[in-house]
Image (cartoon, rainbow over all chains, first blue to last red; front, top):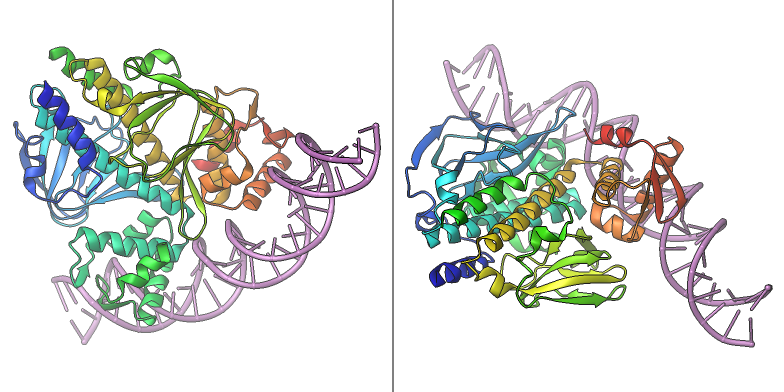
Length: 224
Length: 224
DNA sequence: CGCCTAATTGAGAAGTATCAACAGAAGTGG
DNA sequence: CCACTTCTGTTGATACTTCTCAATTAGGCG
């Protein structure tokens, strides 16, 4: 029982840092009867109002989590990439959709055994870590409410680059429409900001889906 | 142990609904060695980078949780009112400030005993419920990224009215600047939207801090 | 190559911020 | 009690940002 307490406490403290995509970080969550599934581009993983029976860990590819707006629009809440855990809901029904952007491979675990496995303290700890990480991410996203389009797009580039391991060239898995729906702006605004950044020498675009960040400092300065 | 599993599961499911401000909902969290504290208007409760040792439950008054932006601005992340639990952090340091708006009374509990009390399944359950409720709230807030000023202000009025129990007249505890910083717009934009709503007969303003919502349906229509 | 879709660019309209002026309420001191 | 100050909120004019709609270009793929 003390072990339980210690691990829960540890997980609460550990989530200030970003968890590595290392599989071991969520081994316990997906230890019992979990299985792998694959999805094709634009294939739905779950819809709003589906029962929230399972949680997922990304193995490969990119997933968009989004809500359909009543005006016909769409708001993307998160992009999930390798190592991310998603599908943690507040109720027993999904409150957003999830669908594959490209070819996706995930691990799927039933939520009930995970939630109801109290003797395994590591499982509880991992669930806390994943939940706290998600809370932190959403809080940061909500901060963008006070930012203009340039700042949002700069922030997006830094975020996606960091999560992909800061490669020389970022290969964007998502379309301009996806980016726009994530940031709450239009595709034209995204496009214009990228053009402007390229003009200033902040980035270079070898192709529409490829972006080389030449000056991360400049991007950081916009947000701070 | 099965009781633990059941309660954890239950709390996950229960948080889709809004918890009532009833004290019993968080009795266990504040059962051990918690004490009450009061704060005067604009008094700081904690700062960013303070150690996140305690969690709080609102008894009376209103608190703003906010981050200072590097451009000198301020982004309010949440208003906390009677019954709300706040101070749940992802790391061991505060990542936002909290300060009293009016005369505030809170219950304060050390986080460590709460987190490290595994034998009390209700405590774990309540911590889950509070965390999940917070996650849900922040997710909704992030959705406003895609909304214009009119929609944000309509949404704010509905939110604050609902949380205060939908009285005939909403007495706003916070200033226009607070509202503006919460929504990511300017005070002038807030003011103009209120004027426009009043012109349309959607609301009436007996005073600057008093708003009578005459047509909630119209406000809902703006967001949907 | 030719088709189809995604992305970019341009022009004008709409939305929002900025700056300035004004109004009203609350507090202060005579 | 009144004059004065101060603070908050509202209103107006203008500049800037972002959206909308349309046209064009660039890439991907048969």
